[in-house]
Length: 253
Image (tube, one colour):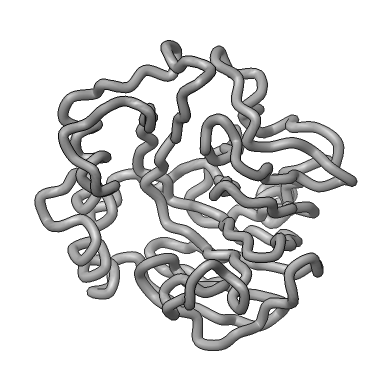
């Protein structure tokens, strides 16, 4: 009985994902074979840096399937970022090479087919991106972004699939709280104590959104609809803008 109670206590305990001073527990992009500069630590927070050499997300070293993640975040004016989960794939792209297509979705298809990019060969005057196929808890400056945002792209949305039910974020530069709950195919997004999204990753909206953007023959469509990987890292997105994250804690469910 005591061992069972201990096991239950351990399962219920929160895990600190960020110690406020180092990238311990994360894949530090500055330590990779070809170092990146997408993230730094500033005033006790993980900072997504503006216009990095390689646009890439910050991966936790731990992988999670069913969990509750809590965090604090703030966004810069006209900034865009997010928390990603249920990662299915990551594809490195050299954005400076010539391709037979221009549209991003077809550029990514070209990468899947020909694999012309190699991070190890990226030159200092070239620009790279590590594109991650995952689901995203959108965090953005709703009011002042570069264009008028559709609901599918506003703070709290399941990005490009399902809009939030309400606006709950604060102004750029102010700290917000966030909570992400993932259990099976069920997900919840919370902003400042308000549940703004309650959704299912196998809902018709997911297939419809994936088809609308990628088309049914694209490799990304299959990954987003079939979702073969249930356990994955937590990712902090770098979208080329400044954003800050602190007090990240996760509890396995």
